[in-house]
Length: 76
Image 1 (tube, rainbow, N blue to C red):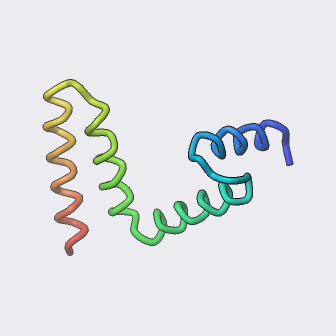
Image 2: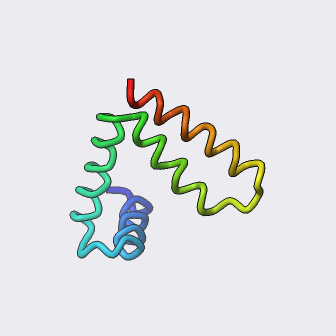
């Protein structure tokens, strides 16, 4: 395994408060599986996470509109 990959996994392990690297890998794989299983829901979650980080009012409104459209699509 490349050294840079191991370093990145160790960083993610400490950042996400996992016990070890194998738990980090399982968490990453679980997240990818959920993203592929429901791509619209993963986009909705991504937008919800971005809303808390943005301070520009126009961008917040645009993201809220996008979020509403994605939730409508998800209901279909």
